Length: 363
Length: 267
Image 1 (spheres, chains in turn yellow, brown):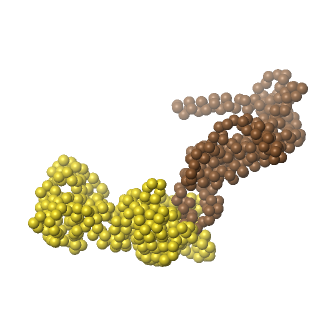
Image 2 (cartoon, rainbow over the protein chains, first blue to last red):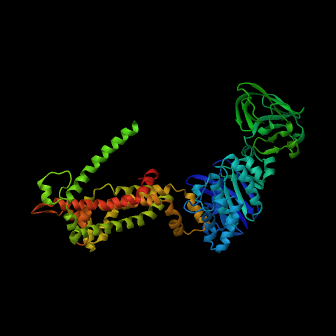
Image 3 (spheres, rainbow over the protein chains, first blue to last red):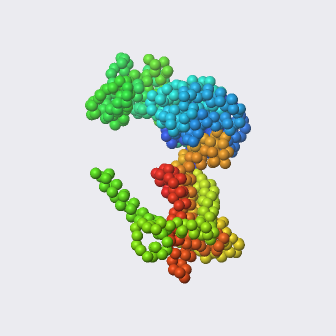
């Protein structure tokens, strides 16, 4: 099965939710839709499922136009962000309902429901009602119902966002294994860059109803084509310093000079934006190449095993992501260290000019 | 201390509510002569003659049968019409949907007396006068808007995604509506049925205008007990007590749904 969207646009009232999107998906592929809230991820999924009809454009399945076809006739399964189950049916009947409606034989239903339930660790709860389960288990039921019928298209709309951290990790790993074995097109939406990276596959980066960039997930992560993609695909958002290149030296911020080495050696003279991800900024020197950025601490956020330090340099806000718990007083002057090989360079229009080589990032 | 005060307050309130009902019960168990002769807090010469009179005279007991018939008929029609209508109001957007929803409610703003004459003419033209269906249909004027209003509140509380999931799974609309959706708003249906039943049961004016003998409800019959010999207090009281019974029974059946309904929906 292949699914393709051809210049699909969806407007609701005066608002454009999806703006001329063209995409194609092949069976067996795992696809991540990454974008912030209101980027149009859910709208796009609904169009793909056939729940909404595009205002313009066509949707093709296996080369056949299915634009206006009812969702009941399509081979599609969907998992919502909220835990959606049939409250009046038991877990078993919830999972079995798509099979029952497809008139699958009773013994076959029983076998498949039990196998799917086992896969998602629901085998002990088959006789319960969804309301008698925890949130994580309820979402497992919804996922099981989507998996039990081997559909051509499997859509998951931020399925893990309402779960607590630990359950999310657990279920994400299981889902990865499950996706491996499926022949269907899997489309998974998320707002979190880390989640997208863990799931791998192909990525579609979206913003304000448009597709910004597509490609294999790691490749897009390492080469975000525009400043907007870099922002969406970094958490916390990538830091930008504007600067100029003249006579083989880049100058940015308040008189920080960096030599044009590594990927930047062929930069022409001109104005550029230099982007660097928060996890590449450090509070201590790590190598002799490191460039120093003086900054003033504004705020420190401790997030479990990580600390986010918000600081300003030349009235530009920078976020440093450090491992472990660090306490830095607000208002203190600090020095931020960054290796020059870590900079993404964008031209004035926001298009990528040079990106760090993957080997350099690992080093 | 506070709990005790509340308790005492509730007891007083309850007593005030019960006094007239108790007095009616008291009178229904005494003969007319006894009622007129002496004042008594309880029936000294206990008699069931009033009840016997009602249960043996068809012109009395048929009043209950007629009333129950058109009330049940009305409840069924109201729910049958209001369920799909409320679903449409809660799920779809169409031109003038909000205006139409409000217009439905305005039907409840006019007193029944306004409609009595037009209804009488209309039903007599169609030959529906003095039938149960005539009263049931007339009461729909008040009950359908109310039912739509209550049910819409309950339906809007059900996430739309459940409908979509059902369609993705392959449910046809009628199957989804009956096997998945209605069980979800069971409490709402119970509450709505209760209100339809109650409004139709206590309504007097339209029921009396549209019936002559064959479909005459008990409340209309009760107004006839004034005769040349005066008011038949005992009989009237017994009829009154019996009129409370069906309502009380319905409340008993839907009491759990009611509590949930008041907590959840638009009642």
